Amino acid sequence: MKLQHSAFSLSLLILFICHTKTVSLSPAAAPVQAPTVAPVQAPPPPAAQIPVLPGPINVVNILERAGHYSLFVRLLKATQSDTELTVELNHTHNGITIFAPTDGAFSGLKVGTLNSLSDGDKVKLVKFHISPIYISPSQFQTVSNPLKTQAGKGGRMALNVTTTGSAVNITTGVINTTISGTIYNDNQLAIYQIDQVLLPMELFAPNLPPAPAPAPAPLVVAPPPEKPKKAPVLESPTVPIDDVSGVASFGVHKIEEMLHWMC
Ligand SMILES: *[C@@H]1O[C@H](CO)[C@@H](O)[C@H](O)[C@H]1NC(C)=O
Ligand SMILES: *[C@@H]1O[C@H](CO)[C@@H](O)[C@H](O)[C@H]1NC(C)=O
Ligand SMILES: *[C@@H]1O[C@H](CO)[C@@H](O)[C@H](O)[C@H]1NC(C)=O
Ligand SMILES: *[C@@H]1O[C@H](CO)[C@@H](O)[C@H](O)[C@H]1NC(C)=O
Image 1 (cartoon, rainbow, N blue to C red):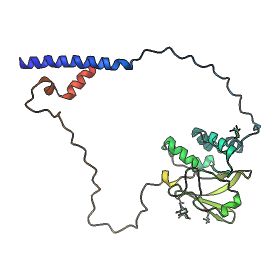
Image 2 (cartoon, rainbow, N blue to C red; image 1 turned 180 degrees about the vertical axis):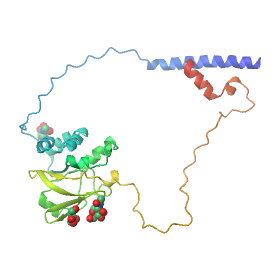
Image 3 (tube, helix red, strand yellow; image 1 turned 120 degrees about the vertical axis):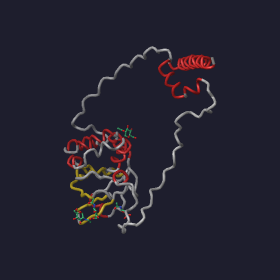
Image 4 (cartoon, rainbow, N blue to C red; image 1 turned 45 degrees about the vertical axis):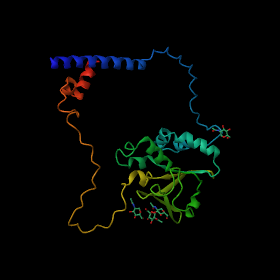
């Protein structure tokens, strides 16, 4: 009798929950709105003209004409840095310097290097190749390190320049490379060719303090710091043992499961 009663209460409970669930779900099923009329599509813009229209300098255009920077161009476009550069070049007083890695530089990266980056990190990587000041080839002799880039300055985003004669070396702490050519220079914008992608430490160096000199193997290996313990997972819901109501003996899991396919 008691069991029967419990089963009955249980089914009532389920009915009640199912019902409430339905009711509480109904607002979500909002009345279908009449589809908004699609705005009349503007005619597609005319194909890019090869002679550049007067106006702000177009970095993508310059790189495409120069050839073999197609992967960098793709990255500029994917991160919308191309349109940002256009705006910046239209307003800047200090000019802009861009280090453009060749396609060969990108193919020299380990497989998956770019794909492993989040969209935000791709933006950082591109900005790391752009300095918000115009630096002429001869000014590299006197710039102070670390060089300011759009990705920040110094620390683990350091871009350092050293010169030997007219050769300009660049180091990021992850890679060393040399400027191997001037693609464009108009005293406001300079674009230099580099043969390696500038990989900043922040994204590509293991996030570790500088490794100490190897010490003799310690006799006692310290255990790794203990992680905070998770609250113990209970096998069954915390219900007093003497509670013999049907709900308790079914267990919360079971009921949820049932509701899932009943409702
Ligand atoms: C360039 O800047 C001028 C002045 O601020 C502005 O009128 C013009 O629309 C800008 N052009 C572009 C392509 O951003
Ligand atoms: C620049 O790099 C070249 C080749 O990697 C190297 O021989 C030269 O010593 C470097 N110069 C400076 C100033 O770091
Ligand atoms: C860059 O130069 C600064 C200043 O000389 C120095 O503190 C920093 O360690 C250098 N970083 C790299 C990666 O060479
Ligand atoms: C870069 O150059 C520095 C100093 O010239 C050297 O210590 C470092 O090992 C080089 N790093 C790479 C990745 O070649």
